[in-house]
Length: 447
Image (cartoon, rainbow, N blue to C red; front, side, top):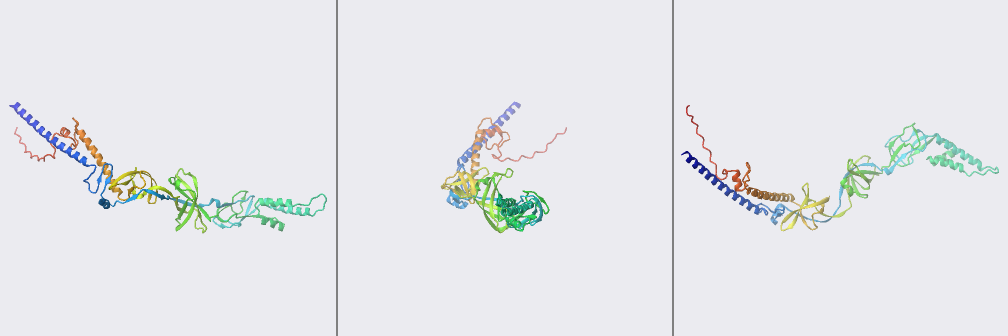
C-alpha cells in the first residue's frame, strides 16, 4: 500500500512540472517574437512623436515639423575673417626717448637746479653746477694760450714765426670735449677769468624719472645724475597668449582702453613683437606706440587692448551651427527631403559670428543653426536604441544555448528553455498568486 502511494505522488509531480515547462516555453517564444518584431521596426522609429530616426543618427522631419521645432539653416561658404585678439598691458616709457645727464669730468656738486623726481624740464635748462679742479685748470690754460698767441703775433724777432693760433684752438677743443658750452668759453675769453663752477644742461625736454645726486656730493666722470623721459609718446607693453602669437605682427592696429580714462579710447599700432615666450606665463610680449601729447597717460597705467589682424578668406559656417561635445565638434547638414545628418568637423579660428572649418564640410552645404541640441539628443537616442537592439539579439542567442543557467538573474529576456532551467516555477505574470490560507493553530496531543 505504501509503494502504490509513493508511485502516484511521483507521477503527479512529473505531470505538474511538464505543464509548467510548456507554459513558460510558450510565453518566452511569444516574447522573443515580440522583440524581433520591435527590432525590425526600430531603424525608422515611426512610433516616436515628432520625428523619425535612423540608426546612423539622421533625423527625418516633415516641413510642418521643421516649422514646429523652429529649425533654421545657414550655409557653408567662403567668408572674409578678421581675427580679433584681446590682451592686457601696462603703460611704459618709450625707451627711445630717454636721456641721462652724465658729466664727463670729476668734481663736486655745488648747486642743484633740479632737485626732485617728476619735475618737468626743458631742453637746455640748467640742471646742476659742478666745481671741477680739472676744468678750472683747463680754463686757465685757455687764457694762457690766448695771451701767448697774442704775444707771438706782434713779434719782429728774426727766425721766430708769427703765431697761427694753434695753441688757442687746442685749448678750446679740450673744453669742448668735456661738454663745456661754447658760450661759456667765449665768456672766459672775453672776461679773462676762469669760471669756478661749470653748469650741466638738460639734453632734452621731458620729466625727471630718476635722480641719483644731492648737493655737495662728489661725482666721477661717467656717473649718471638724472634720467629724463620724454612722455609725448609712450609704449603699452601687452601680453599675448601663446595661441595668438601668429595673429599679431608689426603694423597691426590696436584700440586701447584705460581704466583711469573711461570712454576715452586711444589708437595705436604694434611697433614690435618680442621674439621670446615667457616660460612661466606662456605669454608673448608686444609693444604698441601711443601718442600722449596731452600727458594724460601715466607710467604704470593698466590698459586693455583690442587688436584686429589682417583680413583673410576661409571656409566658414555660422558659429551657432557648431555643437561642441567636449571630445569633438559636429554640425547637422541638410541632406534633402527633411533628412538632417550629423557631421564631425575640424574647426579653426572663431571670428565674431562665424567659425572657420578646416575639414568635414563642403562649400554650398546647408547646416542647421537652431534647435541643434534637440537634434543631438535624438541622434544620441537612436544610437542607444541601436545598441539595445544588438544587446537583445545577443541575449536571445545566449538563451538558446543548452545548459545555460543564471540563478538569481531576471529571465524575462531569455529563451524558454533557459528560463525554465533557471526558474522552474510559474512566473507571477502567468497567473495571479492566491494568498495562502491562514494556518490553523496546531493541536498538541497531551503527553
